[in-house]
Length: 98
Image 1 (cartoon, helix red, strand yellow):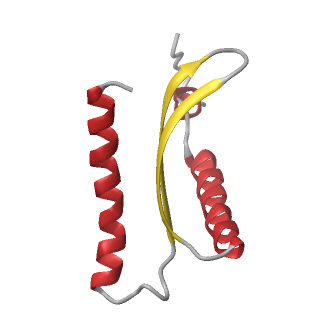
Image 2 (cartoon, rainbow, N blue to C red):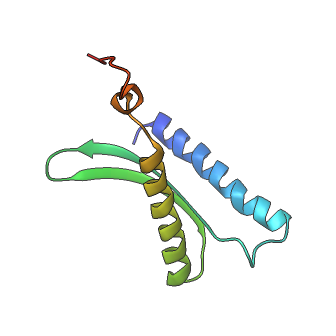
Image 3 (tube, rainbow, N blue to C red):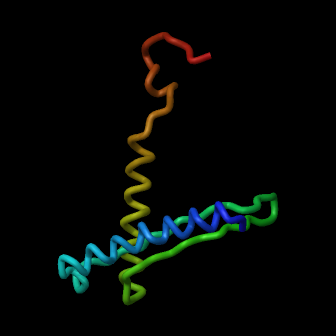
């Protein structure tokens, strides 16, 4: 990893740790759970993907991991349903994107 990438991850990690600081500031340590994950693909080929990552979290059990994972999956599915590509937007207007 080069210096620029190291600086990037340092800054991202500091930003993600601020979530925990804010949680503590407001006294929500017992009721807030969070996971912050940032990954940078370093190498990609047909067989492998190499990724450098930074992870900051405030979870105490597998159940909390499962809960946040389910929330993320649901949000992603909802976004996919609501995202429209150009063909969807032009549907019925007799306009071609070609």
